[in-house]
Amino acid sequence: MNCQEFNERLYEHLDEALPTNVQAAAREHLQLCEDCRRALEREKVMAQFLDSSLNLATARLSISPELRRRIVETPRVRPMAPRIWSLIWQWFALKSIRFAGAAAALLVAILLFVGLHNHPHPAAKSPSPVAPNNNLEICVIDVPFYTETHLLQQQDGHVLDTISSSAAVGHALLFESTQ
Amino acid sequence: MADGQRDSADSEGAVSLDLEELLSAHGDRLLRSAYLLCGDETEAQDLVQETFLQALKSRHRFRGDSVVYTWLHGILRNLSHRHLRKQKRLVFEEELVLRQASHPASANGADQGFCAATLAQALQKVSREHREVIVLRYYEDLKIHEIARQTGVSNGTVKSRLFYAVRALQQILPQEMNLFVPEGTYNQSTQ
Image 1 (tube, rainbow over the protein chains, first blue to last red):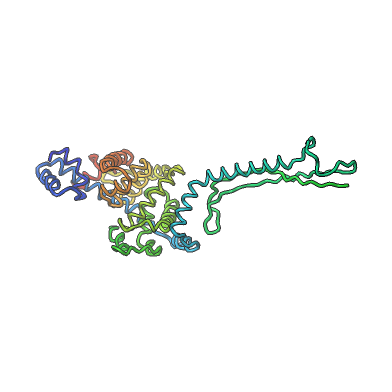
Image 2 (cartoon, one colour; image 1 turned 90 degrees about the vertical axis):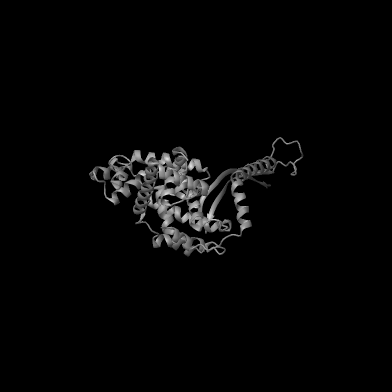
């Protein structure tokens, strides 16, 4: 084994993850090569320095009673769903945005269809169900209504996020005849 | 170090996924790792909370092939990726500058606490891939092939990232903390 080959395997040598014969060749090379011994030593010192420094930097951190309570109590409120429902929900969540869009489009189409067909046609050729009468007065009451469709992500009765929202305006036409 | 802590909740064939036990065995360690990955204590707490919730939701996927801690840490890592994508990282540059200005550089190196805090802050300035590989290798003590498996890259990529990550850290750290310059930690320790 030469220096380049050893350097390429330095980490695996430290991990003792090399095949036995390669590990033996690495040890043999180390006995002969001062530079590679220093490189190995440098890596060990650096690993020790980083390990102790990072441990020291984070030693003050621990799970507080408040955080423990938050973690422990949240899942208790809502029992785990069986796996099959979880998979179905995941599939649904992936499709939800497209689904919400399609649902909104469908809703608008239905409202338009209903609105157009129920709208009174003053020049309609078809005979009116109500016989013409000079005293007859037809009142058309247009009641606009506003609908919103929201797809929400909920947990424990609380809304966590809004996945999609859509809105549509429809018209309910009410007819009233007075004599 | 953490090995005993990690293995305490693992037993072959009967892996306990009781939340209280998981929290006691791995909570602190995960919180510290989360802090190193995201650089903010409050966000680290949120990440840990979400990690345990995700773990409970997906516990049916845990087959006991790896130790529980490694599994939990994998979830934490994925969550921290998402978190970092959503939110630009907060870097404590102001605090770091203040500390550097108020702490006189000494020829024989700064005190350990200062070194540790400066290193943790410097870690937040390197790229996500570099920070991750440093934390996994030097804080979590993972072997190269374990890091490769966790991050989904080859052993060669892990080694390359380690090399560049250490180099990036050395460029950020104050001169007296650079490991391999003449007045650095390594040369002092070997003199």
